[in-house]
Image (cartoon, rainbow, N blue to C red; front, side):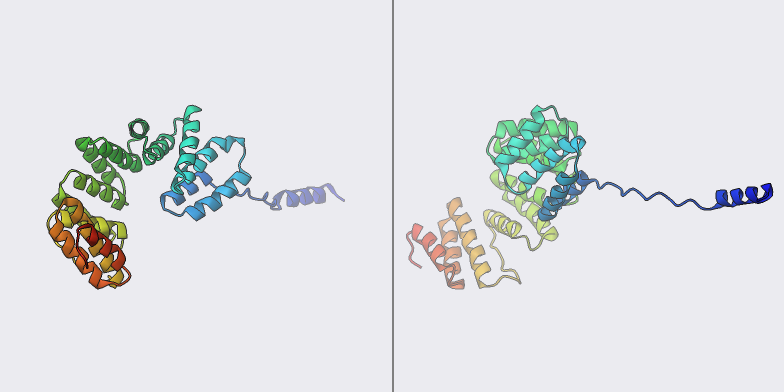
Length: 276
C-alpha cells in the first residue's frame, strides 16, 4: 500500500466519530426529595425514598440519612423516637437547623416546654426563614402565657409560609386562650377561606363563634350526624364557659338531630341535671 493510501486511511480513521462513553446516571438528591415529601405530607412516598436511599447511600451520606430518619419519625407522630434521634444528632455537633427545629417540636409534643423553647430559639436564630420553627415557638410561648412573644412568632410564621392554615389554627387557639374571641373568630374566618373542608378548622371556628356570643350555622355539606356533632361540641364549649342556658339549647338540638349522637348529647345534658 502506498504512503498516500496509508495517510488517507489514517485521516479517515481520525475523522470517524468516536462513540460516546455511557452517560453516568445523575445521582438523586434523596435528602431534598424526602424533605419535600415530608413537608407536603406525603409520608408513604418519603418512607419509600428513604428505603432506597439507605440501600444506595455511602458513609458520606450518614449524617443526612440520620436527619431524614428523625424527621420521618416526627412526621409519623413517633415523638419519643424523634426526640432521641434529634438529640443524638445535636450532641454529635450538627449545626443543621432542621435538627433544632425537629428537636424543639418533638420536645414540645412531649411536654418538655423549656427544653423545646431553647431548641426552637436556636433554630430561628440561625435559620430565621423556617416557618415551622416559628410556628412551634408560638405554641411554646402560648404554654408560657407569653402572649406578645407568641403573637410575634405566629406573625413571622404566617409571613414565611404559603401554607398558613396550621399557623392560623394555632394563632386562633392562642386568641381563645386569652379570651379574645372576636379576634379568634376573624382568624378562623380567614382559615376557612383557605381550607373550607378542614374539620379541625370548622370545629375551632365554631368554638370561637360560641365564645363570641354568636350562634353557629349549619353548612351545606352537613348531614344529620355531622351537624349534631357540631351542635354537641358547641354545647360543650358553652358548658365550659359556664353558660348553662346556651349549653342546654345546643345539646337539646343535638339530641333531636341525630339518633347516633343521642347518647353523647344526653350524657352532657344529664350533667346539667336535664333529661332529654
